[in-house]
Length: 262
Image 1 (spheres, rainbow, N blue to C red):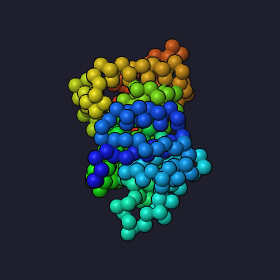
Image 2: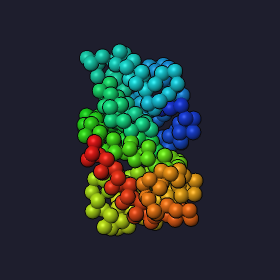
Image 3: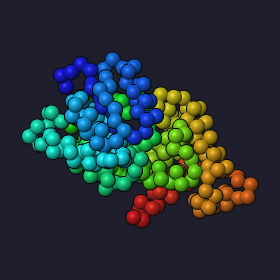
Image 4: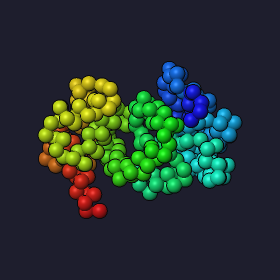
């Protein structure tokens, strides 16, 4: 990439999220925000006008969704003009593998499942701008993990844990990790929480407190029938709650069994 600063365009119908991304971009010397849009039609017009290096594109938007925008970009930038096409990082709250594969086939370079840390998103933007082939390959290789993330996202939502809670994000990370390697449960503080803390530049104690808060919230406000189905006798009329470790272990085991059965 020849430009010193990465030109970024943001398209998402959440005004709050757009403002949070904008606030982080303006702090950086290696990026500049060249436009924002709240729907797909505005996004397409803005991309044409601004010629960004990277587009952060929400998958679900009014008037034209992210898939529609990708299809239009393919018409505007055919295969013989790959260098003129902006790189695209997809934002999605959906965890369907077929949908993710579709957006990658349409030319997206990377995808991120909501919720996410803005700092991590901008790190991916920088990486996609400088090494698009490498991170597209990584995205394709992560399809299986992404499918697990989608399952966990849907399950935590159904339990009643708000998606904007930090603990939602850390719980999802922990469960996905343990589905892949249950040995991480042998050292929750020193291994599992430490990995999450390192990834998000926080302390192990912050991970533990956020996870605890989210589990407590589910037991007070969540779907008792679903919680009973998953945790059995742990849930009673007194709303007794599992420990963090028990929660992560039980959910991870349930998902692992369902994947093997599928």
